[in-house]
Image (cartoon, rainbow, N blue to C red; front, side, top):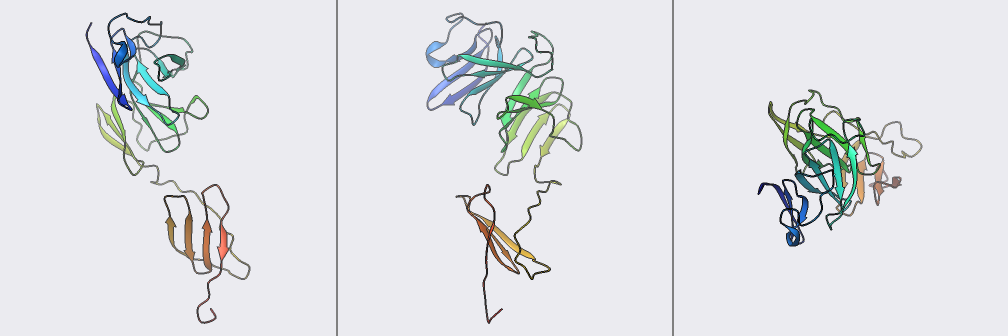
Length: 219
């Protein structure tokens, strides 16, 4: 009855996941001091997402969204049942990628993906080798790779491997070929592309590229 599964500290405020206690803040620890609903009774993992909410996996088939006050906002079922199940599969670990997608590592069905923008589970992330075993932990590194600790080995997902986005540059008239030599992206989002036919630039990835000519010895 004194078991705790996870701890998360946000701005010096600790959050705890205890057995039959759901989500607790430091000032609200102790069995049955607050009423626990029928969902997220026992929580495995607490995760702070980029949307500012706490997302939790529990001893049921739901992904649970909480406010900072520990009030539960919503529950999203990842097995397609739309019905709470107190036994069976469950979410053990969580991570968020650069596209605001939550990676949900489960006990028996690999990884499920939840889009924070649409608040729905998606299936458009594919692996060259399917990961279907128990997922013990997920970690996103500084290169946006996701490391996956499983009972059948350690996997790594690299979003840049074998995935390319093609962007057409506004090449000036008169050029049949425009070889790109280098690309530079600043922390501010400003981007430069150096080519044989001039410099292309834009202030952020949401804007179109602009072109600037450079001349040296009239070339």
